[in-house]
Image (cartoon, rainbow, N blue to C red):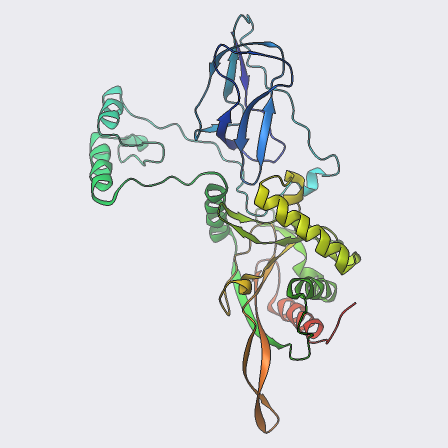
Length: 371
């Protein structure tokens, strides 16, 4: 028998979740026929067959997580059991190794092998306890009968926990990584936008202002390697724009915003949003962000402490635009105000650099119009 393994999906991610098998055991398949649809941190990917043959066994069911290099399918009648990897998937030739970074994706990790005796496993099955994420209290992390019984009592009292999957699972890992690695500082400020046109495109104004901020203070448009204590300043501004969906957070990347027209950027952003909603966005369009925008004010909230995701250094949050009292010389007037929250990694940037960045952002947003 020959085992074919989950290939490197070209995203730098260690695992994928099986969404749907397109074939069954006993089926005859042909080369390039779609075998299975899987979901990584940010994309849904179809995996084709590397050869003609009969499917002897499928490893995993819908909802199962499988790691790169683990058996995916088994072909009948094959002598070689060397574990040939299912063919390399096509990737965007324009993405370099340097750009192989996803905002919102966790670094590669190796899944630990849970330890338990056959009797404990049988107890877990009888009590219908899911052990996939259960932490063992025994020696060397071994799962004990007490661990199983404790989990069963919790399930009976509070109901079974729903494991995070797909996008939300990767988001949780990534947020934990950011919390562990980044030294965040948040700088808040308001900008008066009373002179804006009533039909102003707020997102485009924010993007234009971020480009101005990065040109004034390049330290915000950077990657930082906390292990090597090395900083990489970027010449191009590749902006990750946070997009909220029912499945979780997506951050498509708009390339080179400092050298593109606003109409071109708007068109690209609209296409990306549509692709995100339809789950058809190419993995390459989720890679290589150098700074991030979170326009949470389209929903609610004035200020926030947006999370910086390594290796980026900064994220700008924009709150709800509102009319509020503003002191103007010797009188109080009502003005339209846009609240801003800039979180930066203090390991890689100084307070002065962050302040100069947000000063340039405010100056740009204060203009009546932009071109």
